[in-house]
Amino acid sequence: MTDQDTARGPVVFDGHNDLLLKLHSGKTDIARVRDGGGPTHIDLPRAVSGGFGGGLFAIYAPDPPERAPDLAKMEGGAYDLGLPGLLDEGEALRATISQAALFRELAEAGVIVPCTTAAQIEAALDAPAMAAVLHLEGADAIDPEFRVLHVLHALGLRSLGPVWSRQTRWAEGVPFAFPADGDTGPGLTEEGRALIRECNRLRIAVDLSHLNMKGMDDVAAVTDAPLIATHSNAHALCAHSRNLTDRQLAMVAESGGVVGLNFAGAFLRDDGKMEADVPLTTMIRQLDHLLEHLGEEGVALGSDFDGAVVPEEIGDIGGLPALRGAMRQAGYGEALIAKICHGNWIGVLRRTWGQ
Ligand SMILES: [Zn+2]
Image (cartoon, rainbow, N blue to C red; front, side, top):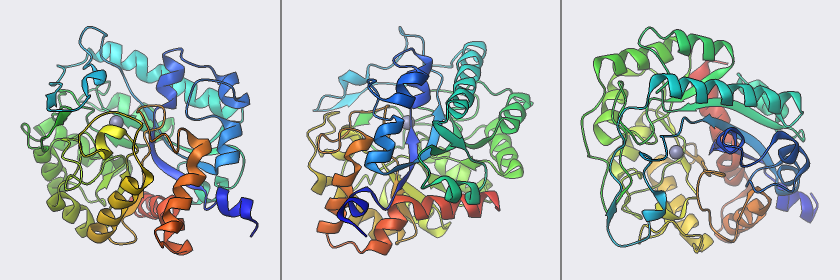
């Protein structure tokens, strides 16, 4: 292996990014994601140079601007951004269809390879185009008869978080609050339980990130799949409501599930500030804690690229070699680094999907 291979590998397959939202909201376009030079954390040239093999690509329906929580308020001290109310189902559906279409356009442009099996991810991992699993972050567009869910499944949807941090018919998300834990409201509704059972039937992975504590307990009681939190951190080290307590980590471990380390400053820094000034040693401390509570098969990455302020030493997917370097410096062996970088996501998705 050359030094360059060591810097670029093992390739990262990541639990969460918001590139589709950046495309949907017009912050970039398909050509710039393919050719580089755009404002996003993710594009194809940097995927190659940084060793970013792909991940879960989230569809996310935004709140209307006047109701959206102001994430810029996560600036330290205590804060609680509150919980936005129900999103209009029609508006959510329009945003969802738009981003599902953009996912297909990325595939047609050769930027991603859509994947619905673990074998497809493995096959695409080292190719220039990114292995991409279609994920829905918040089931606001889905009707109680699950017709929209069935259409999205037919389009390749294989992962779903029932809620983002807002109210839904299924459950309540957790508001962005610091310092606070996720015990902020009621759990799954009857319709929410039915949604989890339908996802189990369709073999769609259920993502716990953004659910409150009772919601997670309720999913754990209903689901027959491993528990997954695609982009969350350890609450013991950063007391943000979005992070998972040691009790919640034990539940994930018990189920054979996975937690993806979120790179967002607000979920890493011990003052809860959404800032890029985060030393890589802080990420390593999080990984150490997650490894202690989840074991070597339970820890992965869930960057939140293109959805959050990430540590300045990483900056974007081109900076992933710095994170690999920090893991090596911390004494992680190559086999463990490969599990964290991609092996554990592929493993838990295979156990969830059955293929
Ligand atoms: Zn999120």
